[in-house]
Length: 255
Ligand code: URA
Image (cartoon, rainbow, N blue to C red; front, side, top):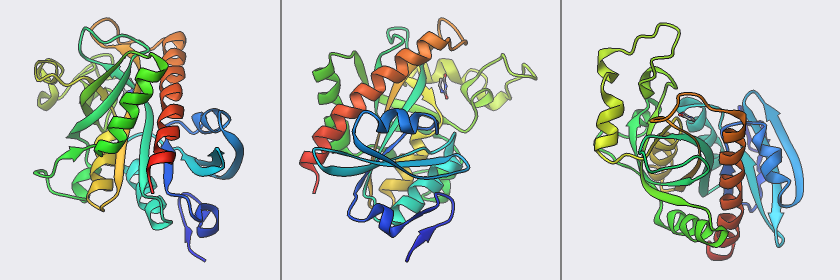
């Protein structure tokens, strides 16, 4: 029987399942799964935590990617090997446009590839774009829940500090390559920074798989570099609400 090494899952765990929700944080896996029917823990190895659960009897997985591109690529790779076709990131993010508030949800239509892992799947000319079906379902889910949302381009960086032009790092130095990048992405109407979406979108679409990303806003970088506990909770709560409704729509519309 096929077994995948990092996620510690086998074919039997995933039999017949086509959809996975992908939070970054392993602790968010049971939190999400507990909102559905029959949550069952399947595996927990390193940063990868997986539950199976269902909605109206239709099963799907919740698996954590860990932080950043390399661990996200491994998650997509191993779940694809077991038969998963639809991948929806359920993450958190820092907004860079002034008009976006903490608690809003950002639906990525595409991503700036400030990662490294996506270049192992496809050359730089290849776009990081989300699957239309997933974007559409997420927009409907936000409207249904009356949660403020924005859709557009996300910047996905391998680093939380330098690549997102934060000066509160240990060295307080941002290499020249990234100096001014915050303002540039802002002027180019990029909505937010996070660390996984570009890798997810390229790894999936380059393999003929379908992926999308929704991120709850936990800070607005124009106001503060700090993420408070309350703001984190609000961003997480809202993105999970949207994820629940998105799953409902996808499970009824996808083959
Ligand atoms: N995650 C990130 O990568 N950046 C933020 O600003 C917030 C969450």
